[in-house]
Image 1 (cartoon, helix red, strand yellow):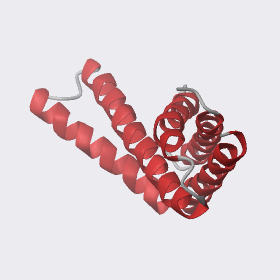
Image 2 (cartoon, helix red, strand yellow; image 1 turned 120 degrees about the horizontal axis):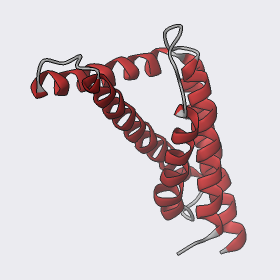
Image 3 (cartoon, rainbow, N blue to C red; image 1 turned 180 degrees about the horizontal axis):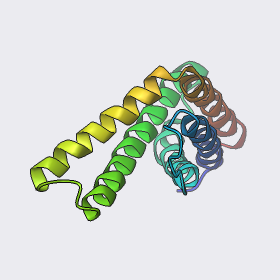
Length: 147
């Protein structure tokens, strides 16, 4: 059921995902084609905000912090898996793998590489952690105001 808390959570986490993705792109190797990376992640952030944070809103500002961290972790998980899968398929179409087993191992290598870049980049982590808390509080505020 659509609520103001779900709308604010979707908008907040979409913005966080977009800005974190823009910061993440700067950490990628020179010449990497980002394409629709930020826009896709913004969509994933909006879906995570709507479905995870929007459902958990209305419990208070303290629990909203953990709900925001949960929503951020959900978004990051799906972004890593989705982009890792896309890269693995793209590389297998260029015949970079010797077989399906090597492609699956390549998928995990890509996800681990992206995860390492994510964790070691303090601007990206700051955007995700601080922004996730602020978006959760915004959703909580909307739940208190319009419920």
